Length: 86
Image 1 (cartoon, rainbow, N blue to C red):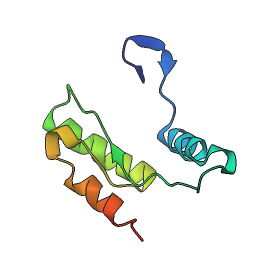
Image 2: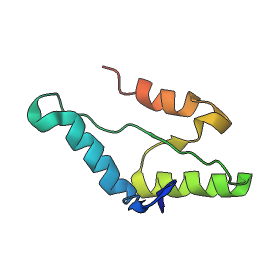
Image 3: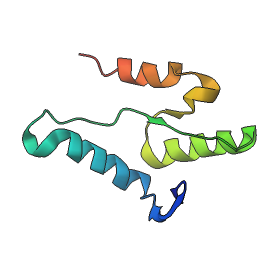
């Protein structure tokens, strides 16, 4: 719900955060439009069942491939990025 050690810094809804990253990376038209391709979660402190739930919930909410690369490696997310190459 908030950034670690900064209880006042609330984490926004994922769709809002994704939109922010895409707008900022576009830099007001300076750079080509960019789309977020996948999401890497930090699931430190969660058990396996909780990790599976959070990954599934995030994928359902955003429609984007999601994983914890520390726990599961980066293959799933790299495949999503690789699929964007033209």
